[in-house]
Length: 268
Image 1 (tube, rainbow, N blue to C red):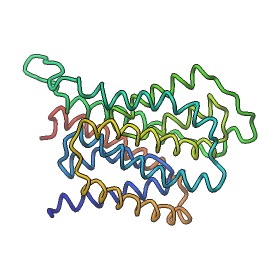
Image 2 (spheres, one colour):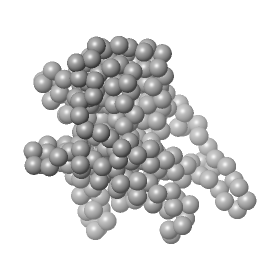
Image 3 (spheres, helix red, strand yellow):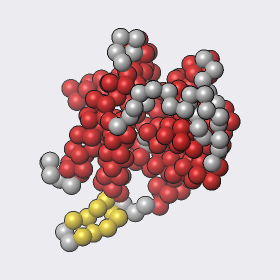
């Protein structure tokens, strides 16, 4: 095993630690770790990321269900369109994207580069969401009121993004649950983990039918991430997650810019 591969598995542990500490965000690192440290094709990396994110979120969701924090009605209303979108994106949309998307002069935008650039843009949006996040349990005690059309639209949008880039999309789901369903912040975070878990794993099902999966590697990577979650939960008793989230947001911002520059060959 080479030095770069070792860093890749350390990255898997770090992903879990961040998820355990701040309840989300760590999954945004999964694809860069798989692509740049473990030399996995971006399409396959987004598939593996769905599995890692799905299993990791499921661990957190089960803990939240035990604590009575998951709003199942909201999860169902939001999840159905998200399930449809994420499965469709993995099963039908990604396979039909041409290997060479567009050619401008001497530059050719390939499918792999396009996916990484789109992923970097999502990283930039996520970083702003984490940097601007506020403390407190917004909406605590409010009556849950559903805006069904907007929730369905948001579910479709999050499912599409998840399907293409393999990220959980918690930075899109949590604000939607607070603003559109009126959930308190604690319940929104807990409910989002359940939504992320199920839609990610359903999206991965679409990949089983179209990609060759290296199960030995994927299960090992996922196991290391899951171990990291428990370390993160333990560290969370000593470190305030909200302060860490803003610092991590700046890191994600830098990573997003780096990926865009790298994919456009600014860094060779």
